[in-house]
Length: 342
Image (tube, rainbow, N blue to C red; front, side):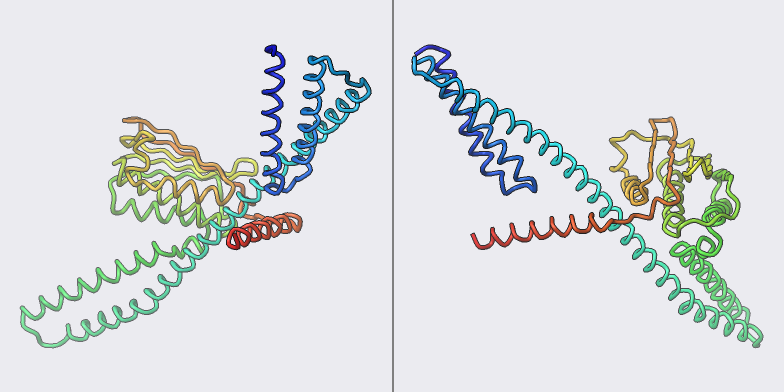
């Protein structure tokens, strides 16, 4: 047996294996026509290889038969290419839908988190706040009584502790749900946070903006505010920065935050090990279909840029997208039921 004949037999075996794999994949994807055409083309190629083998064995083969086999192979592979293109489009569409659903899930999660923060803040402010104020008033009434110096000192210390508790309560309540952000918008919210830090920190924080009193979607305002606060806390806690610069602007159709500090910087391998929460920031910005870029290095400080479309939070699924998702869900459910029966 010649080498060519051996190679023909090997190719026939390989095509038979490919046919078996294609048969297994027929029910695995939406486009069954792709695999059916592949099976037909592979069968015809097997037939063609058998005819070639017969020719080498001096067995007569009709030219018309070989022509028809070639035509069927060409047609089958042409249809395969078209179906493969449809399959690629389908995969791309599913990836887009998956990203949209992930963004919707993240948005819903963030809304739930902010709602819980607001409820807890309201409970603290409306529940514990009046109790502390009442205690303060009661102590003020005792202050007018005839007390010894020791008792008056204890009264003053207790009053100072209550004052500190009231200030801490206000700060905690504001951190949980910043009322200025909710009432006046993103610019006033960030400026209030920066000004408040300036009274208790030696770090110089510069905040610049080209915006006035514009209001945006509440999700965008809350996420950008939380992200900015997280970046500032990272600069103070991890980078030990003494200079922080924040610029909030609107460039064309994008809200842009340019952030930089003069801290000790970090490498990307240290990014997560230091607990800086940058993955959380990325997830929040991603939920708005925004972009988050960060550059840093040892001793080089850190620079971050955030770009978000004011309409980035408006994610809508079309009726065809919803039907596609239901179809995928039904198929997955049938597969799971089939496996359980097996």
